[in-house]
Image 1 (cartoon, rainbow, N blue to C red):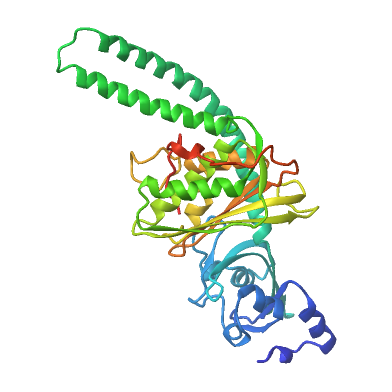
Image 2 (image 1 turned 180 degrees about the vertical axis):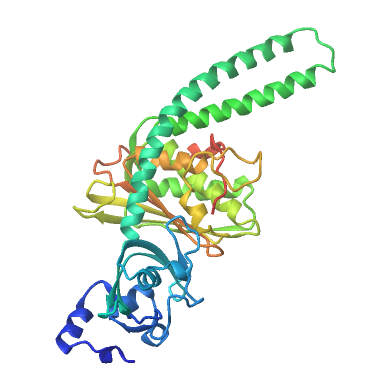
Length: 398
């Protein structure tokens, strides 16, 4: 029935329409017979698409907080119907086909019973917690990275000592008069030790990402340098697009560490586009208002956005993208530290990083760094610290 014929008094109907939370009424078979405009907006549906559907409709694409499927029989409204009791504070992720995105909702379902205790209908209300959930995940990641950093420092110290001893023995043996058939074995040991040394350096990046002199520089120059380098890394088939701010995007950080951020995100994107594609880089100035719940200092910031047209990530992969040692690449192809190092560098620089992605829809990384107020000491010339491969190779997750 039309939404204005749901049996609500006119003044109550007007009040429900003005609410900023979604309101749905569902009958005893979980069929939807009333909804307000906020519900339509949050679900990304029209009135004709929503009314008459039930919680069991196979067209729903609903996820649990861990990214697994959320069966209709276990949705809040069917549970409220089967138990006759309210079901509250259920987090549900709803895929919105028209917008090609996902909204996270906090859902309550309260049944209305007749004198015999049978369910007459269920009032379902829900609010958008997408941003709050992302911020909460960001804080959890920050705490996790802090703990990982402490462990990484100890591991890097121990590993470095062992690697130094192994390489020293290899050098000593190489100076001796050895049979030719022994030398390849020594070189194999040396190669393994050097790879272990790379891992040790990666752990140090993770534990203490700010290794280098801090200064004010224009992030636009770093992006241009990265774009120039990217083709020299064998990135054939990947087209670079740059959309840089016309204003200087000054940041106060260690330039080589920001280079590491760009390179690791870029290599991650390259792996996600094995058949080629487009890598878009943009910079802009944004203002973070007071009271913003993200772990950022209010005020002007530089926003770096890196978007690829690659394979994208499913929800479970996206949730773990910044975890150390997490990689979707085959065994022996990367050490799983690339994006974990990116996360550590950005946060150590006073910024924040987030990623949005979906299977087949590519990935977008957004990096926010505080805008530096002090002027440049001089106009930068060729910004070329990106001449070497990153200490920890990026690992494809997106």
